[in-house]
Image 1 (tube, one colour):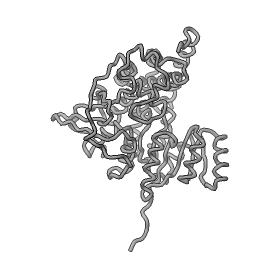
Image 2 (cartoon, one colour):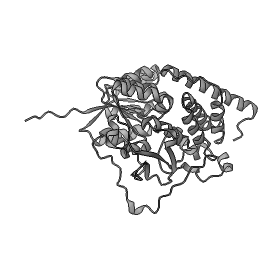
Image 3 (cartoon, helix red, strand yellow):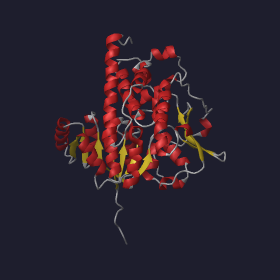
Amino acid sequence: MNTDKPRLQQITVLGATGSIGSSTLDVIRQHPDRYQVFALTAHSRMAELQALCIQHRPRFAVVADAASAKRLQSDLHTAGVATAVLFGQQGLAEVAAHPDVDAVMAAIVGAAGLPSAMAAVQAGKKILLANKEALVMSGALFMSAVREHGAQLLPIDSEHNAIFQCLPCNYAEGLAPVGVRRILLTASGGPFRNSSYAELERVTPAQACAHPNWSMGQKISVDSATMMNKGLELIEACWLFAARPTQVEVVIHPQSVIHSLVDYIDGSVLAQLGNPDMRTPIAHAMAWPERIASGVAPLDLFTLARMDFIAPDLQRFACLRLAIAAAQAGAAAPIVLNAANEVAVAAFLQERIRFTQIPQLIEDVLSLQMSTTVHDLENVLEIDQQARAYANTWLNKQSITAGVGL
């Protein structure tokens, strides 16, 4: 009789203190017979990371810099926790590519998450991709590396995970989906889907971060409010599912019950439904092709009074218009779009610009003539930094000539 226990899958969680990281750890907690935390990373929330290390006892933790690493290592030693603390991009890459790691949750927000996600790909890992910027910035390079290194890429964004579930089963085996006419990417529309432009002029950071359906970090909440989040997801969907930008349509669905749909050439439309809780796509990707409990309550169809579907207003949501244009332009345009948006959102959260100036900044940076050559990851990061420099110049000129006027 074989009494050996099955080996626990070792999981690295990049961005452990964010909303995706928290949901991932909740799913892991529910399945101690399947999963074990190998490494946890955080940028600035040291107290939260320390508490997570005490709870999960990972082999490694990664923080932003050497000083933070020294402090956390000392605190964990005092608490009797043997976790080794690393720092910086090198530390992130090490825990993403470590030979003992089975799967990597790539949940670091923004461009900062690209190098570690790529390290996981190059190590042939199972990547649970919650960092959409990795594909927005380096779609061709990233997907090529996935194929070259035999990595397994599973989408975590609720919309892309829904599309994945609605595609033919053999799609995940590297075969292009056959018979797909359109991908319908649903969006809640955020808190301002019915607001006038005059009302948008007066939006505060607190209002923009108050999403009606989802619990998310500040940056993603603002992106949802501008609908840039949906624009970035459209670009990501094109790379994930080998779709042309014209094949991906955004549909505002305020109830956030249908997470996305796939329209087939025979007239069939398949949709994935569920309560708005990120633990569902996380559990699906972690266990795929199996199914495991996520802790999410069953969807009660009888309580759904209605489901609405509305075409997005590209005048009100200029960020979505800009993202669609960047998807169609390709080359360096999505890199520039993402970089300018990150600078603009940070400036808005700091109350340096108005909500309506976010797309103005992005459009002005996109209009500049920049390199269109994208050869490798280093080139991607160079274009990203150049775009950020232009965006910061725009901000400095704006503050000098007009002021913010909030």
